[in-house]
Length: 263
Length: 285
Image (tube, rainbow over all chains, first blue to last red; front, top):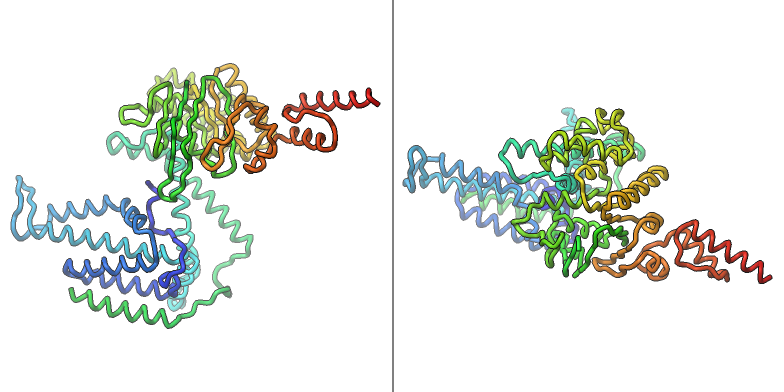
């Protein structure tokens, strides 16, 4: 159910992928996401899918879990598909009824966009699945450093991001627990029209927000108790350092990105 | 038979954990059951099966003779019959007033305004919250103990025949715990409720229950009268469980050479036993 969402979850491991420098992983992710938007043919997506699957295999991540993680975005995917299929015009007309029609161009674009979204989500979830939140923050903070002189609070942003990522699974778990508790009191989250359903979320959302605020309060206090006062003058236990492996990964990524951008 | 489980197995797929392993169990009307076991032994999973919040991976659950894991069953009906108070139930409060929150359950059951009103008043009286004083207050401005009582009242207002409580006394002060114990005793005696109590506090279990079920690793390992259960200190300790403190005292006395019974767990009983033993000794001397 709710806890199926894989975004923001970390699966510990000791593969090459896990050991790559987080900064490099972020850069690679950005490069490949950009490349993903340059792909113009399905064959490009096929290559990309092979690439994603090989990473999953190398990092020995549970494929099932990643596929399950796509479930929550199913709605978005279907919506995209339907909108394109019905609204994009051009090419042969497959089916027509009054003002509605399905045309070749629409079907093509629909599936094209859907492939893109699915790959995008699968691929970006790989970053968080193989990088511990701590390393991820370090990476983000480091990459944002150059923008500090323009007033970007790099370390604070990084800290906020880690905390957000860290609490996604916790809040989902909490949501499921509250949902069960309300169901035990006869609440119905599944049936009724859309207004009733939205209303039925109140007994879930109010306790969830309250608990989130309580957690935030506790966390702030705990951080302060351990003398957290922002990034100024903070040193680290584990300094990040690029290894040869990281540059190989970057080189391969660039070659791959250029290669798939031609399709 | 009120609740019956036949060869129930439950696996949490994501974590690939077998929470319950071929459990068969039947619970009669008006029993008071203490459900114990260390953390992760499957207690919470077990009670969620009783009202259809989760479905067994394998096996069958019957309530009043009807199998509840099929499409046709009205789960609301089951959930009215079997009230479940979760751990830290005060975290589920959401309404603007205490009244509204307690009325949430009855309203979901489509009860009339008058009936809801009556249910809420009765439930508040049971948990010792004065209706006039509290019904219009926000549940979030109450103390932790009061919030917990509002949450329990929310379940009681549904008029359950079976009341299941998952560690209801966790985090309460001694006075709050004592009140809760009294409430459970009262509900069992005067409302003929069947009660299933999950707790780590063996004193509570010993004082209230007339049957104790011990879970370990998803299996029922002991199921007996509390007196029989708590006389097996060694076995309980192997399972990571305690015995009531007073029983521990008796055990220690026995190890020191006093001839006292070790299957007692009420303080008054133990007092008499110790006094009898001491007087007996004096007489011999």
